[in-house]
Length: 239
Ligand SMILES: Cc1cc2nc3c(=O)[nH]c(=O)nc-3n(C[C@H](O)[C@H](O)[C@H](O)COP(=O)(O)OP(=O)(O)OC[C@H]3O[C@@H](n4cnc5c(N)ncnc54)[C@H](O)[C@@H]3O)c2cc1C
Image 1 (cartoon, rainbow, N blue to C red):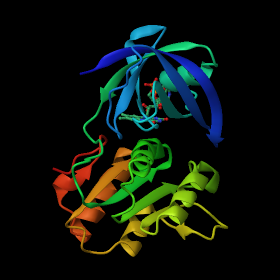
Image 2: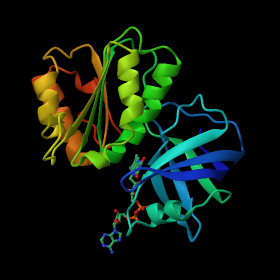
Image 3: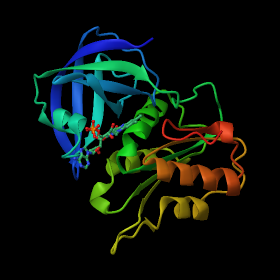
C-alpha cells in the first residue's frame, strides 16, 4: 500500500558530475515499507498535482531514512526542486511504487545493467544483497554505462564489493572516452562481449533511458537466451 511520508533533508552532497545524493529522515510516518529496487514520487510544493519519480537508492534496511540520487536537469521541475533543498528542509514523498523490485525468492544468478543515473535503482538492490549475505553464493554482474568517466556513479564502493566477493563482477564502461583502461563501447556491446550465451536461469534488472533498456533486453533475450519474464525494469517490458 502506498503511503505519503513527510521527511526532513539530513544532507545533500554531490557524488559525481551533476548528481546529488540526498539523505532524508522520515518524520511521519517513520516506518519504511518498500522492496529494494522500488521508487517513490516527490510532491512539488508549488504544484500538488505534479509528481516526479525517483528510485529509492538506499537499502530497505536503512532505518527511518531514505537516500535519493538526483541528476541535474535545469529545465526539470522535480530536479530543480530537489536541488534547491537544504539540510533541515521538509519534503513529501509517496511510496513505494514499481514492479521491478528484487525477487528475493529467486536463487538465480543476476545481471544488473544501469545507464548513468539508473545506477540509483541498482544501488539499493546491491546494498541489500550485500547486507543480507546474498552476494556470497551466486554470480552477479553489474554493468554500468556512461559516456564520460566523471558520469560514473559511486565507482569506489562497487570496486570494494568486487574485491570482497569473488563472484561479484563490476564492469563500468564508457561510450565516449578517449583515455580509459576499462571497457569501452555501448553497454549492449560490452554485455555481448563479456556474458555467456546461456542466461536461461538468470535474472536481469535494468534502468536507464527507455531506448537503452530496450536495447539491453533485445541483446539478452535474442542473443543470450534470457527468458523475457526474467527481465525486470520499470522503463520497458519485453513481454
Ligand atoms: C521509475 C523512475 C525512476 C527514476 N529514478 C530517477 C533517479 O533515481 N534519479 C534521477 O535523477 N532521475 C530519475 N528518474 C527520472 C526523473 O523522474 C525525471 O525524468 C527527471 O529528473 C526530470 O523530471 P522533472 O520532474 O525534474 O522534469 P519535468 O518538469 O517533468 O520535465 C520533464 C523533462 O522535460 C524537460 N523540459 C521541461 N521543460 C522544457 C523546455 N521548455 N524545453 C526543453 N525541455 C524541457 C525537462 O528538462 C525534463 O527532462 C526516474 C524516472 C522514473 C520514471
